[in-house]
Length: 344
Ligand SMILES: NC(=O)c1ccc[n+]([C@@H]2O[C@H](COP(=O)([O-])OP(=O)(O)OC[C@H]3O[C@@H](n4cnc5c(N)ncnc54)[C@H](OP(=O)(O)O)[C@@H]3O)[C@@H](O)[C@H]2O)c1
Image (cartoon, rainbow, N blue to C red):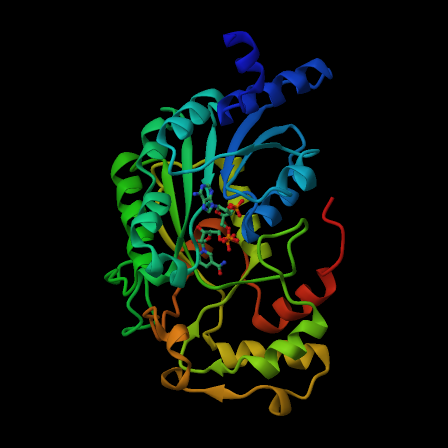
């Protein structure tokens, strides 16, 4: 009987969202004064962002879309509407955005590993370029996209926003492609943030990848030599969260729309990052950290091209937000202090 089959069918993302909203209304919760759709909410940045938004803006409705991380709804269901969504399912993306009717979209979801993108370029493009998402955004909404410093080739640092983008791997190409589609579709309502490598404490909830604790760092220093050939403007997760929260609060205007580099104030190698972490943990850095040339890494680690120096000038973003940029030593101390602290 169709009726009994209906009872067994899994809810679509849009139906699941409506169920959560109806249950909030039934509990007498007031309608929200802003609705924000966050994709990639279960990721490293997404979890830090949701924890901050839920604490800072309790009157906003947060629609948090995640991929396949089963524990996400359990960890965050009390503070946001958690909806499982596969970005490669165009019909589900369109239906969910139509139901949520977001005032703001914070688009974080991606296959964020360059190595994974390189192994399956077709899937990387399907997820990272996701055409149905842009087509479904309501006319009044503003859109903020987490792009990457890997749109640059690494041969002419430091990069400004007027530097040529010339990605050397599938990951960078797919992110640049979404940037271009977004800028063409919503020229006066969108911001692309080209993020450097993000540093910070472990996520508040469970994450797909295990994150290192102090003891794990000692093990990982010993087992994985760091290449000193790559230079990055590493950036503090707390700075990104503050920038995203300000953009969501204030919206995007024709004056603020555009592409921004989002790096920290220093250009550092991965070895310097490892040394700073070791020093903070009281470890003997020269004993534990072994800088190596990228050319001597195993083939699997070299399978994806990596731009050597993509350090960036982020003056334009700092002028827009007025937000000071955290330095590496403060990041490492902050991560150690925040590890284990409750975000809620
Ligand atoms: N982390 C960095 O150092 C860094 C640097 C530069 C730029 N970025 C960019 O910043 C953003 C956030 O990075 P992150 O470190 O938080 O990434 P992350 O931890 O790898 O999280 C990726 C997120 O995307 C979701 N996702 C993956 N495939 C999906 C699919 N098919 N459908 C729906 N959702 C899917 C994942 O969901 P599940 O886990 O639930 O499957 C997860 O929520 C990304 O766009 C990344 O490219 C990151």
